Image (cartoon, rainbow, N blue to C red):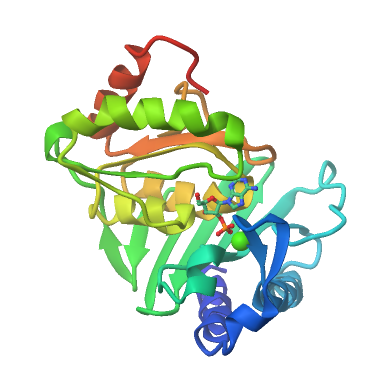
Length: 262
Ligand code: 2AM
Ligand code: CA
């Protein structure tokens, strides 16, 4: 299964990599911060077809679905983002990926994330560790002050801007430095590979974190909601993730903040 998911992610990645004149195919969903292109839809249809060939009884949850199917009776569910990092894709900023998760009864079993621009493919099977292009990876083991913090700005939710900036301000003096790349799935994989120590974003959708959360966990990371509770695979939530030491450090910083942590 994992090998086949890997092949499908690479083939889907090829559609992204060979896309041309992307800006001519852009449609604004709710505004200029929320985009979809012809390629998001093309890749999602490719994934739906190939993944359901692999496991016909599975449900399918994809970002670009207009009508969501009822998944409550499904044992297996694919949770898919055809292009995570769509704004990067439109701008020609090569940090986007195909993200494929496969969950069984609400628990992630397989995750594959492929960045077609640099050929990096992250994969994990629950209980069997995580890999980057087939080689085992593990998270960093550094305290917060020696860790890069990656954050996401939850820019789709205006009401979360003050909270995000407050947490940014609280964390900034205590980490080595801060990065913002624009693809939550890749951000979680960067933790898995030890390229950064910790990540937060105040609200994401399941297809943004399904695959990446398993990859990060299998590499030794802690991945939770902002309040430390487990992620929900079927509703939007905030994500706080990192190597155990950096995750703990950031969690304490956020807990010491007055106000509600989402
Ligand atoms: P996308 O590129 O697939 O749109 C950036 O902050 C991260 O948030 C990206 O992973 C982005 O995914 C994701 N994102 C996009 N739309 C979102 C939405 N409506 N709610 C939450 N996260 C979203
Ligand atoms: Ca997307």
